[in-house]
Image (cartoon, rainbow, N blue to C red; front, side, top):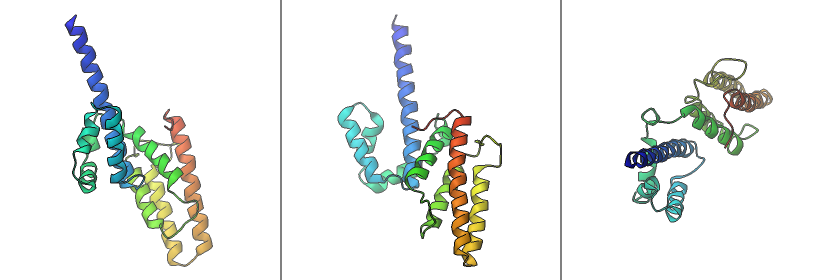
Amino acid sequence: MWGFYTRIKSTIFLKIKIMNDEEKFRLKLRLIVGLCTAKDIQDWAEATILKDIHNEFALNLCFMESTDKISKYFYDINPQLLNIDIDKISLTVFDEYLLKKLPEKINDQYEYHINNLIFLSEYLNDLRDDLQRASLYSHIIIYDDEINYLIQNQASVQTQNTYMQLYDFLRKWIKSTSKMNHFHNE
């Protein structure tokens, strides 16, 4: 009888650990690409503790002395050491980035956005869209090269058109990849 309770307890602990590992990686990605700040994470941890005093992950974050320490903690997380579905989490953060941060028209923040897209795409190497084309990373690099060439040649109309092609490609890619890989946006 006690063995049964021990198994249930360890199963619950494992589910909580996986959930915390998933949340750690999700927060890492969101922090790096500017979807949240270290202060947002600190506020989240404090609100979580008020709801669940036993949440060790949130409690540990509350004991960190500064937002700099919180940032360093998340930057140092190695997702390869976590027991998580990296593709699924990365895809949901990538989708969130497209919806909330990526402008529909090119602007002076282009380099910032392209660097964030490249960063996120590096976690999505194993995913392909329904046409089995090259990796997302390759597509972003190709579009970036073309846009930089057009910027250097001061071809603003072509630059905007190419950026719109990239934007449309990313929207179609996320929709197709989410469906094909049976991921749903959370």
